[in-house]
Image (cartoon, rainbow, N blue to C red; front, side, top):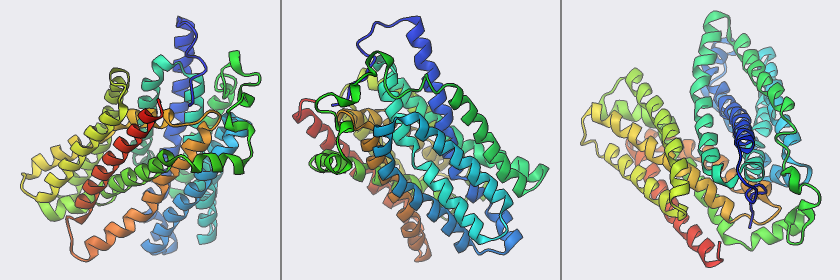
Length: 419
């Protein structure tokens, strides 16, 4: 199993400062990933007005982005484990810069498709890169906080995109907004470049020959690595877990606004506020969850309990029995519960990761999120078109509960192996 390369060293103010510098840099880079995921959706109206594209054509751009991200994420981990995470991180950020420029200069649909492909492949590297660096460079005593900060900054990236893009569109136009998005990522890229030694994939005390120790998968071929991982059902259970939680998030993110209107007669502005509250509460839940990682070594129990609570709250929303104002509170509370599970989830994946395969494992299991993000919007959209106005909430609740069961199975498997 993977161990943190710095956990055997005595803590000191210097180590603490180094840890938090690493956590901050990785958090900033991760926020760029979430930020860019919403660049296309925030430009839908402008692109529709400029080029006359239908919303199905615009939606296809988002699908292309996430398909590219899923394919790239499943494979980029192998690269991370073999050449190190820092050059791959710079590639991901640079891809966003290029994609932003292409969107801003686009003269038709083909350039937008190219931008979606480049942006999607750039987006694919962040989880394998980030978790490889955090697991190898951050002290074990601060790893739970590192995971919670990582999730928190991702949610901040989601929250920033509409504000940033809307402001630039208002002050200038959509082309300036797209180029500005690329420029904002370029600033983060500069800081990552300056901190490249700090973010080196393995701690300097063990850099020499660490990857080639006996039992490390980093020294083996891709085929040998895949064959080894394929014999570990817990990893594929983790892939399934991430697909399920992504399905639940998709239900909330994409359809809570129309469902709050249909079920509770809440207008779009207040429903949008409730969705923003969900994301903010989820971010706060991630911070709280960071403390639970240290307090409860049985991370699967934290995951299962928080996800079941989140699922129950979605069922409460689907019942239509609460008042409109209470429904908005329930939405936010569900976000907090889902957020609490995130640091424990990341720690559980760390426990089942073999030596030398951190990037590979995180890339494979996190690609499940892209699978869920690609499939769920279509399935839930069909539900709404067929008149099942509460269907996405019920489906999201079911996915949360099944994901909770998957976490318990993964935890039991880890315990049986002595993890």
